[in-house]
Picture: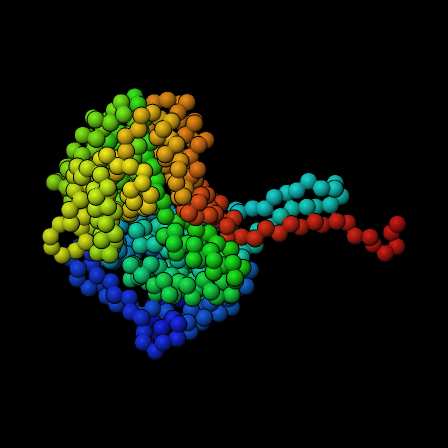
Length: 472
């Protein structure tokens, strides 16, 4: 059942309900209001999910996969509705939102196929015994998902959790709650009652979920600060934690590559989805030999976007304020504002494609995740200098290296403490890839076939030969 909470007490016991008020970041017009789930609603959802879980776990895996395929079909049928509400809540263009829905559909279909063939291992023991492992569901999964790709990310976690026999309580981001509610309304009828529930709420509701001892696994995609709080809470409840959190992904540009191509790659990495991608390019290290033509080309790329096809707005004015503060801090500390960096007049949360030159490692724009359309550049004297700076960070999500040298590529793969290294392409990769982030960027496999393992517990079985009465 998908539950859009209509009324609730405050999560921590006060009588005043907490409202989620969402405005369209393009024009500031109110999209709608929802009431956050409080302590009673969270507790009831966990109890419902726990009651439903044993029967769902006992359901034939092929039947669970069939239900997931039905959910994928339901999401595909409602794609336009989901994309339109996503557009109104977050500013993501409808076309890009439709791509996100399509990715969610494909992910559900993928787990519908992978779940029933999620197999154990045959172990080598005595020739007169059988030894093997079986995967069992963990139980109740509470999933806290983000606003920047609200359908695809949620579909991945929901699909992997459900097909392995867990029941799910999904809390979408308070910045895209209507999208999350509609997603739940489309998917939940494909499963038995209590198997998939949706709760709306902000950080308070999320924290209540993490404090519930009836929750067995916590899946979180969002900020590193929230991820750290979730991990601390799970230490008290014993819940297993899967989290993909913030990133400060470097782009390292070696001598010898085409500077125009490198600038195109940097622009795509920094400005796509207005910079609101966890694996966006956050800091750029360019070899001095091509710094001049590269920087000129990057400024042209940003200027063209600002002139011909302005970026979609940021999700809200709060994020725009945070992004602009990092730009102002960089300029105050010596960076050169080469393009953008000015809050435009009018309603909404728009921010231009921005290029900062002459940056240094101590600037906030280089030490923290910006999550906006900002491309900060630092010139380095050698590939090794850039590699050392790129590796010096508390985050560890992803990194990109543009180089014509196989030696440089291999050394970067070995030296960069991140979950994903991309050589000569800021985005892309083969299907089925799955990485474990490092440091403040999270822990565990958050996607791919290995996500099925995260939602499972492994049991080892040994079957020997009994001694039968009357037989020596």
